Length: 378
Image (cartoon, rainbow, N blue to C red; front, top):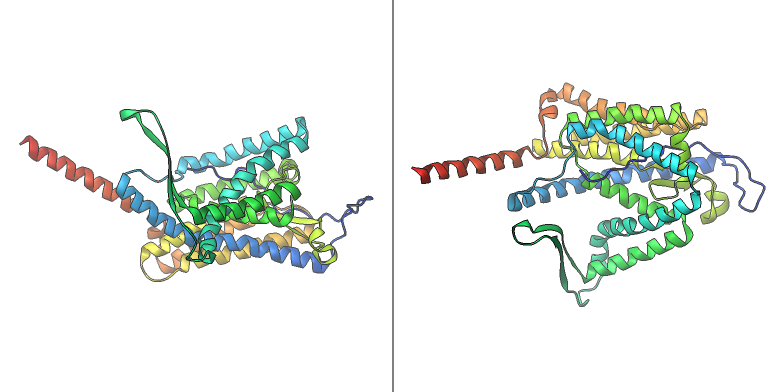
């Protein structure tokens, strides 16, 4: 499986402390908090909805690729899901230790350069189809094919095979301008553009192939989130120190200071992508039923909305950082299972596997090859 989000900042507490300098934070008003929380809520559900439908298309493309090349798509196994919270914990603790030992400014400078390249590519992947529509037909377009291999002869292995055109290069240039803006100003709008791009790509490209695997992953991260938020100050410290677009932010003093606002509420991408890939799997299950219904997707999506709303309400009431997965996991896992029980489709839900049809086709091809070999021997 491709790298997933290993640092999972949570919705942070409201910071109403006023600093005695030029960058003093204006205390959040009820109106300002309402605008900030509503904006974070909308920014969280947008990539899940868009990314889930894009994942269906991506899954179909993977199926065609498998039929042509025989290369199996990368998916998360049950063992990977069980190990993920442990790996995430080690990574989170490692980042916390690094921030304690080294200067935060130099670490964030390196992170800014690293996420500049990742952010530009992620944003270009999302924006390319949109930008292409605005380029006039008279544009002198040309296609390119970039390949990168290693080894020779029978040991030759393909590392990269990428096709693009001049329209993609125009999009890449525009996204690079956003990247330069982020590097130069670290503006919250640039941060959110990159963050949304990461979230949509994550939900689209990261793959769970079974509901049971998703339950193991979400269950493990449910405990992970509770421990690192309530048990220690590690996650909140990292979330506040880690200046990279792995979280969505929105100012609570926007009404008072406009785009120069600096009193932020934030939501980590992990609280979007992890439930998002599970909800995307529910949509692919809906499609596999061929009933022209998306009941499981909408059940999971509405459950996520309710869980996130509960997180915001509890956080606002207690004025303390909350582990969002504490509320999201029971909702996102429980509601679709309850729907399956009511509809009498629980067995179908848990027996569904994303690439089972590909495996069946592969096994069928192998059987045909064996039969052909037997006939030749005879």
